[in-house]
Length: 354
Image (tube, rainbow, N blue to C red; front, side, top):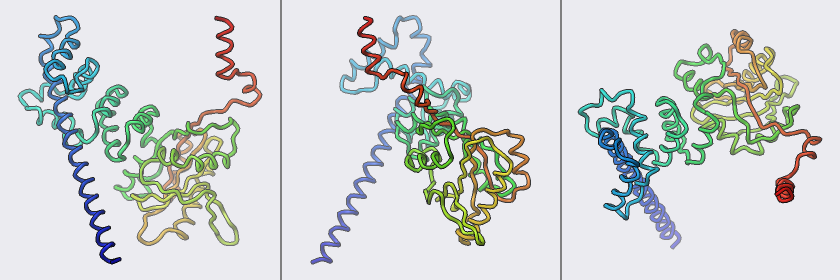
């Protein structure tokens, strides 16, 4: 009886997985058709611009006419038609001549890469159109959304925090200390600066307090670090000889198959910081790393740095280290907080003066 029940449970799981897989494929197919539809409509509006420019509020009229023909279909409001038109123009404005004579499938594939472009929902595309200025920047967020399976809220956060400008901007020695393919991956992994605006800290905060708040907000911290990071520990103990040392933050990167040691400094970069982190990485490689894992990587986060000084400090270091800055929301000193009215006090003052 138990065996039969177990088999039945397995059957339920298999059926559930099949249904979920089918739903995902159906959703992807629907999204693909929708994106192609919007692309083609945007193309037609653009190509017939001369017919429409002489009419007042032509997008308004176009929206009304489409709704009249298809009263039960949404997505053709005045606002969305403007988005559809912008969608097409944004991605082909520099390559219109090359697209002449191509059908909708060929043109979108040549302009933006069909196989990836239809993998994200329309709402994501609208958000990217609103917040980006170049096709390169837009493609970056499209690819990151697909790779990390971002929701619209997470995409909005990454756009707000300007991930495109920060990604791959750390100063490091990866080209000298890692294999070429791994160096490229790691270099794109690191950011500069890291945005810790989900923390609220005093100006003269201690390193231990930053570590404490980062680990208390581990979900947001992992989101800022990027995909693949797994948290191992804070103040992780390492025994070297007769002494015990503590690593500020220790992670393991699943895709890179290596440990990542993060050291936090509340002051500007000093050359000796790199030497100490190099020492820690040697210890982690000897004590924790297995034969099947890649060399450990160090990330040094400082409250400011001089680029030339960092380059010189890393020049002869034999372990892979990247140096970045970090930012956070600075908390007002308590002496000032007492003098700032609360929201309720503001409302009371406004009512008294109205």
